[in-house]
Image: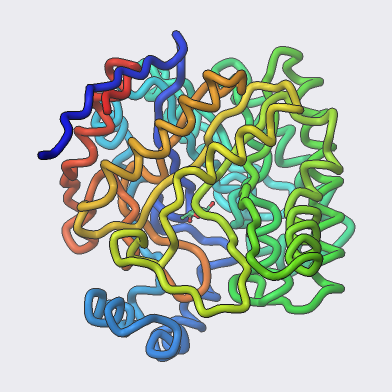
Length: 421
Ligand code: FCB
């Protein structure tokens, strides 16, 4: 006979922030940035590479990966025009926070010339959030830049530091009255790794030299932006969203240990180098890296549509390691590509259960942002529109929004500030 499990009621701390995350290029549509031309030039290639990149079951389930249109962001979700409708939906599920990014290429389409109409647009976006009782978390760099910035060498150019500082100052000065939380950069390792080391995404540069130049410039730019925002608003909370990936290995001692050490060392370098320059920790968590000499196979139930292992305990392991910083932590991204929406509700609950456990063991987690509010144009490499991360399904032809079952499941948790399991 099956044992009846008692229901557990897990309460989150009062004032906990519940939200979702998006980024400009992935949802807004019609961006004219460094990705625009690159997408058109690379779409055909990416469509033909899909055959080797994805497994048979993925190819069968998502035939759109063979269509070059899948790799062109184009109108995306048209969130630029539909943000109020989208925020109404987020409000409907009791969200009291929202993370989004400001598209630098809209604000500064030409070097040194700011477009005030676009600044006004983001002011409206922020007010729309405030009117709905949602705390804005504003990202300044989520991997896209103006075309002129890249033509000048992008992050490999020393001047990138001053360019980014100028943009950050402009935004902070213009929007400071209604923004408290600033996420200066999103996943520096991943964004620069794909763009400057592997060449998988714009600007498509390769090799360690490009990567290191870009990395150290972004490190400097981050610090400058941190200081500039604080000078403009002493009460601002400034940080960055980092991709935390716990490393594990079953390779024999001491090789396995060494692999973990090296992986953790480099993946956390940006965090270490910026100590003292972040007011909170932005934690993006999706999966772990298990390094093995054996071929890894996962049960179908334990993977997402992208083939990523579902490993909720990794979020707990990550949070426990962050305790030493003694700072507030926000889960700035966590989510799953799950087109059929069969796994998403459980995915969220399982991760939240581990987050709750970390809180009860003293980690000061203050908010959770599911990635993403809606299906969107996924970075990087060979992905585009087919991986579906949204609580809301988007019909990319009609742009119709259709909330999934998990939208309501997440909503129940947000509204009550309680997870029932
Ligand atoms: C993260 C990115 C985010 C989204 C998710 C799936 O690495 O920050 O924009 O694409 O992956």
